Amino acid sequence: MEFDHSRDVAAGRRFAFGANWRQFLGAIDERRIGLAEQSLKQLLCTEDLSGAGFFDVGSGSGLFSLAARRLGAVVTSFDFDPESVASTLALRKRYRPDDPNWTVQTGSILDAAYLDTLGQSRVVYSWGVLHHTGSMWAALGNIDRLVASDGYLILALYNDQGRMSLIWLSIKRFYNKLPQALRWLVLGPALVRLWGPTCVRDLLLGKPFRSWRNYADDSIRGMSPWHDLIDWVGGLPFEVAKPGDLLEFYRSRGFELIRLRTCAGGIGCNEYVFRKLASVDAERPSHT
Picture 1: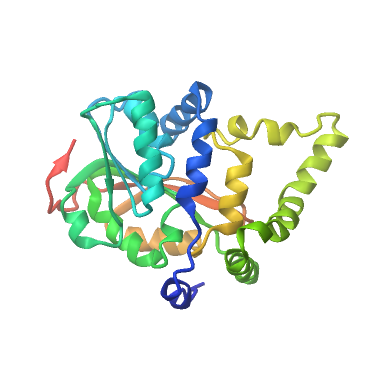
Picture 2 (picture 1 turned 30 degrees about the vertical axis):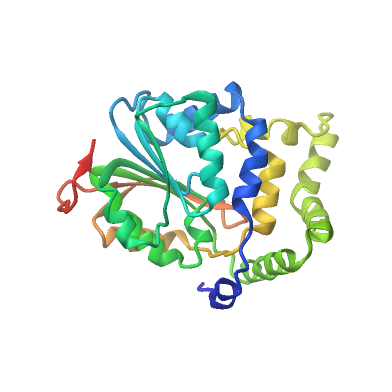
């Protein structure tokens, strides 16, 4: 399914992702960092990234840049949103001040000239980002140039739910049109819709709010249910993709699928790990 985002982009209607990530910074602690490290280990089937280049495309809070750095990677984080860049810088200052192996920059995955300055890396990570650019397929086409031969591309993209995705797009547009003080009119019903059944189930099992309290652990990503909810409801631009379309897209570009975890046709992201075949010629220098 393809959405027309021209009117949203032209009107400057874009969710304040960076502001949400800055609020999330206060929740980041050693436990959440450890969960983020565990997530990367599982995705890449490794305990150690020592010396490996790691591009965090759309770094947001910087949590996974920090996790990669703690695993030994040489990290380059970049984001289009100034507040996201500020969040990543603040996290680096808190945990790894003056670290020469963690670079934080302002940059867009849609800016080919900027991407040319980066070269290539062994691991390119972009989780829940490219579907918010307003030009998702262009972003997907650009990001493969950053992956070194025999390197890995890690993506999470919203699942195409057909008609329901169009409904969510309308909800997101309405949410972003509202003044800040009135956004609870959308956020409240969304909270009930998305979390109500789970909370009822937990209550019936005699474990009230267990899933909400353990969200960071159950997702194995160290994330916050509240901040993820706000990101979902407000996240605009908003595009979606079917797994089959994405697999074909990257197969034609010399990638093989290593890992796929779907949301079973429902709401949320499908998760992909691709490997760039060694036979694919690398035209740019590799940061390994």
